[in-house]
Image (tube, rainbow, N blue to C red; front, top):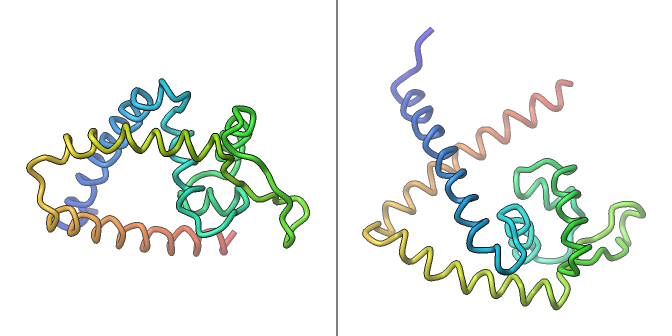
Length: 156
């Protein structure tokens, strides 16, 4: 069996996205170090900040495309550091809600102030239309893969 031309192009893109992810994590670790943030901690703070309202860890993990256990472990670390707190969930006794503390909000805001010059620097020479086209492709692949994963989960 042989990949279609689109399948080969997406395979090549996936390999580059995986390499890019590694570089993004390394850069995030370096940028966040002075604030006590790793890339993983920063990513979870970002997901909490982006949520419309406090969510349980499982929902954050789903929104991030991550593993609940990994997100829970990092959330526990963030709580220990005073960056988040867990609040009672009126809809579920055991699935507490994750809430940014004031220290967490200040740390997130400080991290974003470090991120702004970095993102502006690494995106020099790129066009908004190219970025938007790449985003549409990645979003479509994420949707398609999400449906496939959900179907497999339902089979099990």
